[in-house]
Length: 183
Image (tube, rainbow, N blue to C red; front, side, top):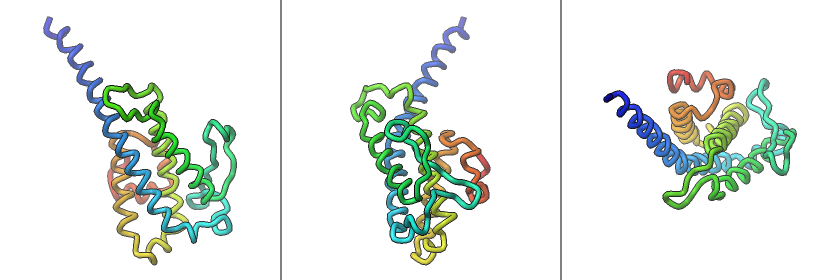
């Protein structure tokens, strides 16, 4: 008899934990967006269409842009254009109260986890581009410690909550393994 009573309690506990994680992920998404925006902003005079004609993370990884609305089929764009599209897209997602409710008691949408995972996957791509294409400039600007701290915080958070598939992390896997046990 007691087992039957425990099961509904466990479901409620798991449900509440899931809701609390969503409440945690929402402000962290904003924070990580702002951090990446700030870090990339210091590189805009160096990350130009001429210097970075495609959005890459080393020679093996190229990222194409699609937002699923205005650009449905992924297109090749320069790194600065990719980041511009990305920051505009993320900002529109964060401002959309049907995705990121701003009032207590309003339910998160069923696609919330999918949207958040896409945001984090794409923010990771900016980190990967910075590390592969602009790390020496980061060092010369004396921003290395800040970049590494922000990335460590980002990767620990994404691994803790399973926000990025392991295969997506490949461009920076060696760096990630030096930070934490692989996710």
